[in-house]
Length: 441
Image (cartoon, helix red, strand yellow):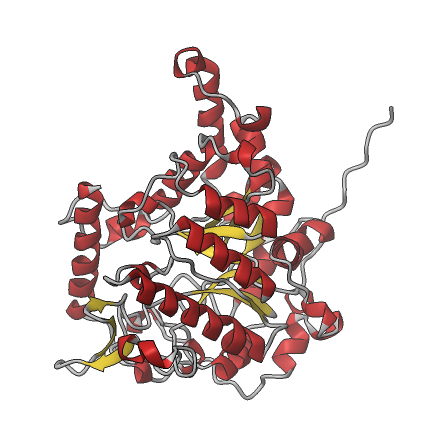
């Protein structure tokens, strides 16, 4: 057998990239529920409230939504990063207006993106908290209809739909997965740790109906960091750098649960995605899992899913993504490259919009063209049943082509305020509550 010649590395040109993000966010517009809630339930419709301090806030009944426009800082200098812009006018319109979002995407050289919810919590948890389950289900379906039929359908070549499901009832969740699949939506957001929301653990069989539907429909369960309403911080009084630098810890916990879950053999096509947790840490934790299995399984008695080792299970069933993770790129040999994707995280503070093409080209320099294409767009297209090229010719999907269509977009955001003590106070209040929730669970 001859020695295989190495694949030559290439120089990645920013202008030639086709970028599809598997993680962006919508700061949902205040009128999003109009036309989607039946008359019988309209009095229960979530609404935006002008509060006494002049800020705006989403409410679902008496349940306070997550911060309006959480970290909606796209286009702002770091000195103007606010934990919570007070009003819609404190953020750029691309955060909440679909037409302006597409213009921002073009200006940033990004073809498409999968958009997670914002005010509902990243796994839609707020809409699961109302006291009436029937009303909750109506609002969840209304959210999905707006998301798929209005936001995504306005530009079907630019958005990968991602639905939310009723977490309080796995059977209803399964029905919603199937309904969404009929609409062409093959991603749902699922909590990184359902027990943090008072839901059953994934180590029970409570989720079997939902997992079965996802397996049948080819729907990916996306576990976004922060979707358990828990914090990765250490103590209630820890300063902001602690939870900010430990944010990926929650994704580490999610991977730890998934590697040892016993449901995989029951759902042969089930796949999960780890979102916004980066990837550079994953090879070590896979190594640790293999060590645990080798040294301790005689007393643990773990039965490997379909005979797969933890590393094999990860490579076959679990997707992952990164924004700007140089360490992860250095360790790509430890991954199934078909399951690694790029994410933008627009309009949150970790996003490098509008400079993503330049950052990605530097990050992936030296990789072969096939690997670059998989990470930047092909994996996202395959894993989420998304084909923008059927609508828009590929040559019109490159960074250069998209930016040429948006030369009038001002990528500097001229509204908002300088960061100050109010942002630190808000952040401490948010993380303190999350740490206390973590301690109780």
